[in-house]
Length: 340
Image (cartoon, rainbow, N blue to C red):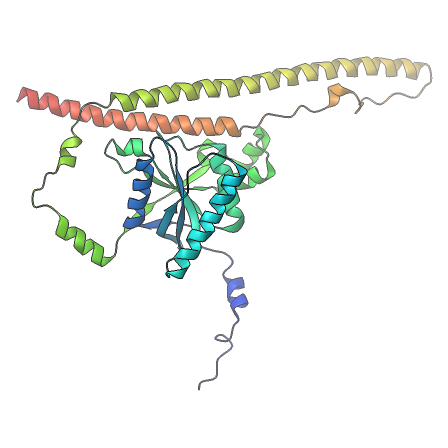
């Protein structure tokens, strides 16, 4: 038997220590069966929002999603949350017994009209991040899928945003220091749908001989007004929410300027008193009094709310732009057909 060399005899801990710096996540490879499970679960309970667990493997720069299962739907209660955690552990135990991947790599959830930018999503990311270094959230929008698009996104939080969120410091100074804007909260990771060779061969055999299907005709529908109306309504609501956030900052800056004016008036009065005390041969008083409430710093409101609202508004605008462009293309096509 050959004697193991020092390189071969390295312990697992030594190998782990040399591989601490993991490669960044580049692609989320999701199996077709997982995509179908997510779509089926989200469409069955639409317009209610549902969630589920993602299982798979973390291989280098690729996160492979090989299985998933839905979470039970119920009202928010401590007892129900405990039952949900027990259900999750029991499902993972059953999958492990049948030799199926049971490594948690994230979760999936449904959304309506692209509205996923919430504080609850960020808190869930932070909770997952404590135990799973690289996790993703798969977002599926059934309303967007009705327009002929596979509305599937893989999201993660940026590292710079997570550092600020842990410190709960979203002041203007910290944001400028980190060079962080509303665009840098979420990172969208490319999705690659994969199937085994056997499934690909089976799907090829199921393809119809006729090149045109009913789905192709559905894409020519000219009525997209309900989807556009809802997006415009949500956009207007988001603009109102952003206006409320801006009013908070205006109120803060008014209080700050009022406090600075009071501080200047107090300092002028104290300096005049000190000049009188110097003329009388007495010691001058300090020019700052920490016990005075006018010297107490006014906390700046968090900018996280306005960042999330701005992100949401950008998403609504992109959806309106995309659907409007497709609608105009279909209208010009129908105009040309009528002329002919």
